[in-house]
Length: 304
Ligand SMILES: [Zn+2]
Image (tube, rainbow, N blue to C red):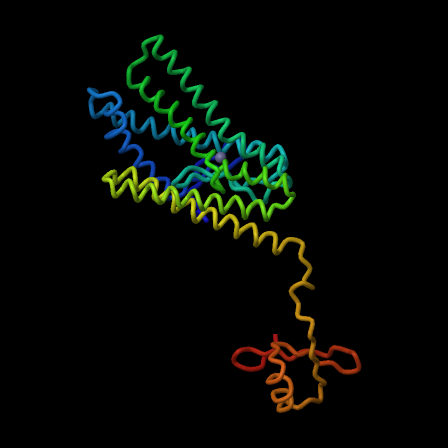
């Protein structure tokens, strides 16, 4: 879904990767912090200082997202669930799991720890800022710390939206899963709720753009479109996994077997078998022994 990404480093045994989209986002965030957010909240500093604050703020956001995903990954590993790595992409990060949680309780704990650790990290920055004010650290440091406090609480809140596959949607799914003991049903309901949420985001995004707030509206619109695709895709992936997991070939095989005898002429084969049954394969059988088979390609007969 997110391409391969560029591997940055290994952290506690997990590969941390960034998707190319994150680089575009990092530039955009740095720019909007340096030109918009910081000059707006604390006017009167030099451009050079705003740029530095923008870069440090983006770096802080980057670390905050890794911290969030790392918490998911650590709990998953605690429950022996293999994690391929952590990838940061345009709307945050994802701890890539190789399979679904075995039960709703693990899913619930593994998910809840993400928003929880973002909130804890947010309050950590809040306390550091408290000291920064107390001991009169330089003003730009105080402002960046406030930003990191706010952004971590926003990360926690945004992820708690009940829009699958966001954490909130996963929590909802694990509750539904525990209630009905049916993962497929739980995923279907929570992806529908997720897709409902994404329509609301798309609607508000468009309304904002029409009301003149182009950038703000564009964000909501893009997040809505992204969520819409992600909720649909996650459900499809689950269906595929479930469809193929542990299913015997018996379920997919055709049960009507038409055999031919080795002495059947090709003309008979075409007239009496191929035109009549439209099978792709005819076993050649004599005295209950399979001697071979006739295989039909779109372009004619063949053997493999
Ligand atoms: Zn999360």
